[in-house]
Length: 177
Image (cartoon, rainbow, N blue to C red; front, side, top):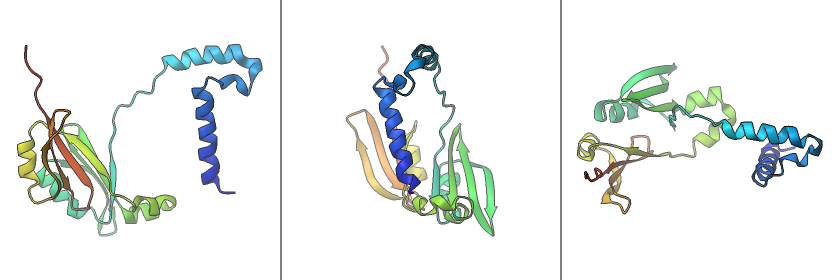
């Protein structure tokens, strides 16, 4: 049996039941308990405290100058993999990005090793000064020249040394009344 096909179908069925209000379909005798439980569930919300992308690469070392020297990030954690880095955490002003090598994934999570090689990743970063960013990433390959958008930002898109796409956006200041 291929469980990769069974799990999404089961998940789709659960989502359908939840979306259509048919939660009581499986156990109609417990409808009062389920209604009370639903009210409590609506009050509870998942609170996400942080979202940190993990970008997978052949080698981590080539991306470090882009983030550390160019953009001013600090390496706050690292895990070696042989004589190279297998994992690194980069941080600046509460913003984090992580990189993990294919070799580390091959050892730690072989079931997803082929999937992480399918990349690249696309990141969208809002910045306060696009001119400073342009100077910091001037050696990067530009995939999207600077442009002004209908939604109020000025953007430029570059590739990091591993080939991931990164768009930097500066939004115009709100008018002061």
